[in-house]
Length: 83
Image (cartoon, rainbow, N blue to C red; front, side):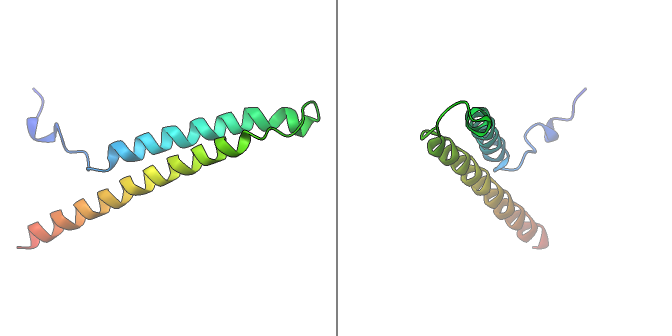
């Protein structure tokens, strides 16, 4: 039988961290696939690569917000345990 107290033990920012990481890596993979032909000299510079870089930036920011939410939740929990 599973312990039901552990069911929702994930920190509040965990979903944001995962979502940000997924968006970042999708952007990174798309950037890599896009820029490789340019580096090989077979295509001109892809201007939409800047948008893919911005996608990576958005993923990084979303993950950062998740980290900050996890830190804040940990501090609240520690403060509550100290009382």
